[in-house]
Length: 488
Image (cartoon, rainbow, N blue to C red; front, side, top):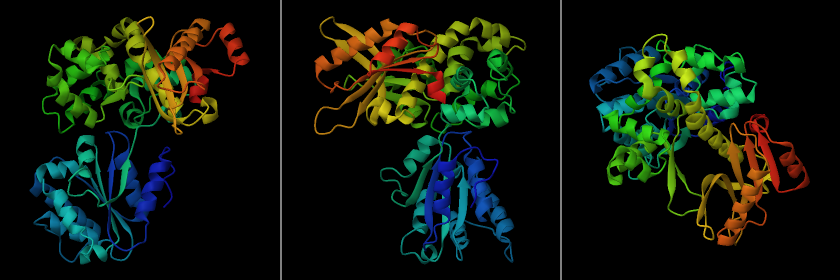
């Protein structure tokens, strides 16, 4: 089962599916594949079925009877039995699917499984019953049944708690967006500053280049503004309304008005639950449900404060949604008028830098520290990387820390591997280093972390002055990280 030559990356996902699909052990097995929309799940699973001679069925929003008619026709075309299938219920369907794997391991994919369950809530229980360990139809089959869905809130519950399929799955694969480094390669961008600007707008969703932007990628740093106006801010481009559609496609969001307002409050810098409640002029308890739904849908991310227990902040997890709320939603009526994109974009530069690029750069620095930085550079393998607020009891001042890496405890206090400051548009100097030194002293005085090996990281998208570079060369606890290091 060789990966298709035209498939970009997804090596890990392909290897996991290949191992699951080609497993020769007797007995049908169940796998679950999930991920936000536009990540290439369908493309991946269709390729698996094509490579291994399997069966693929893509569900649609339809009644239960119509879905049964559709899968009857699909299986008839695939199996070519003596007489066409006319299934009266899903138990019959599952048994036929199990029969496909009588002679060899066969992948069977049911894509957009949540659509089927919405029309027939008993379907997970039917699958559970069909996959009972001692059931003859299961034991004689080597069907590798893969249930796929984009509704993360639903897919997250499919194998959780007391759900019927809990404990039945041999694969639980999450197809994530491409990280910042892979996204740069995917968009064919070699300039790291341009790569981060593009990633701050569209993130790592593959479909946004191939289908939505029709392969349009900025030709260079001078083409970034033109690319934004002809793609994301262009009313004729699918990217223009994509942020709105992402919410509308989530099944748990019946009335999207409140959810949009919650996301807008976060885009305005109200990152705490109390800040969101004040922005919306509601009680904190009133927004608990929409926050939970947005978290389950993978659109809102909760980040625990690294230095204060039981404190957390929220950020928008999908860059395109953050861009939409910061730049597009406030002037939506103007953008819908043809020819307004360039005028709006020129007037939005400061807001884009402060509300989109700055926070996005900080998050990329945290992701790089956790997933890409050499542990030797940090002085150890990080167990957690985040941000937080350090309170100085002597001066009663609060200090924000953009990047904090904590190592694995070894019988004592957790080791603080590094703290860092991230500046997108500012050249960093000794003043930034002195601030980090002061914060490290405060953290050490509080006594919660072992700071003896803590290193000071300066992240900058605009570079470092000569004196800071000299200090980094002379000292072993100062690390300078620019855009080239973050990307290449």
